[in-house]
Length: 175
Image (tube, rainbow, N blue to C red):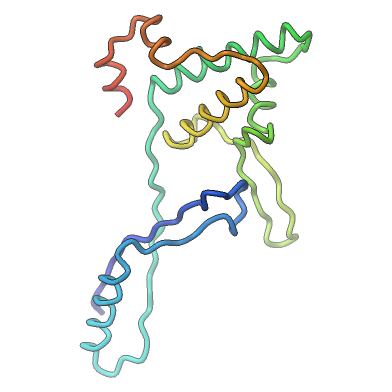
């Protein structure tokens, strides 16, 4: 049997607020070409009455960068640690990070669904396991949340200059 391949994208809807399957859509970026190729195979296959699709799932993982992680831990988390301490809250840095991940405005969690009992559970994502894009979204949400509680977060370029990181090194790490 002849093989036909095409890219299939799974994208979160722009208004999707959770990891619920209804918040995701499937796209065929080159659907006309795929339809053409499938029909060509179907027509040429004597006695064919159906076409079977074999879908291979790959994770388009892009690793987070050193500047992202440095900026996240030094420029974003540290002001939150100070904020909690000044508010008289006695939480460890890990507890603060977990509270931030679960906060509704940040929502750095995966929702795990159990098909057997129908229950779902929210689990905090690990920055270590997150992609570059996920970490970028996490940073953006943390910055917006910080602004809403009156925290000022250092801009990435200010952070880079303050730490003596050359622009070309920053850009090289950011690729």
